[in-house]
Length: 321
Image 1 (cartoon, rainbow, N blue to C red):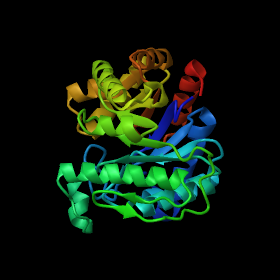
Image 2 (image 1 turned 180 degrees about the vertical axis):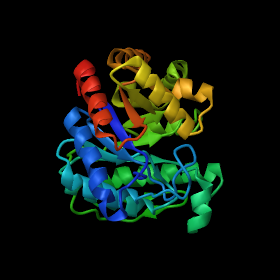
Image 3 (image 1 turned 90 degrees about the vertical axis):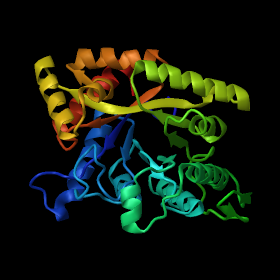
Image 4 (image 1 turned 90 degrees about the horizontal axis):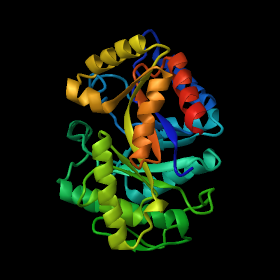
């Protein structure tokens, strides 16, 4: 297995009837259930407002790294990461220190998921500057270089376009001898996938099967250009998952999820994998045959522990964990 085979993303903290004081226990229950059912990684979004294709912007949203640190104390095997950290929210050296601390707390289970950030709404509301896309990509490259150096070197110096470090100390060191894996999220063909080829251990993509084939071919060309073995990069996709005991029930829940998230029929068709266990495994196989190594799933009503358990046992039983 690479960085992840099958991961569960927890995209919402809106749980009907659950008071704020009880919220973490319910979220921890989701993470523990996912791990026990066979998911090998658990992810949370790095947002401060809820995003529009999940729920109202005023819905509850927990800060990602505080939450992951707490989940590290409840879980034992699953890797933990953000899907994905917005590069604009934290100084890269501070981010490297935070993720290293998560790695130590979790006994070596941290993953740095990172991307160029996109949610201008929360930037404006919370006072973060939202640079043009070209500058955000430059900042992403700075962060990748700095984090990689701080994960693997004793006192690195890196001079970037917007961020630099000078003999930066990062003690204690990450638990994993090779450093903490870095996953870059995004599908941009000119810059994002080239940064994956240059710096990342994994990528996370979006789209249907044909889109996956195309994006992975682009990544392969970038790897060739920079002299990287493509096999070193774990290739993953983020999408929705609805699995139920019967096809009829899965289709009902899929319609419910699409309506709740305001998905048009075209988006729902490519975003969702839905069906009974056999149908879900068949659809997942199609993506793996297209060149993916792993998949990360967002489920409707993630707090439904029976659904999480069925999803994890279905995937790990058919494909291994």
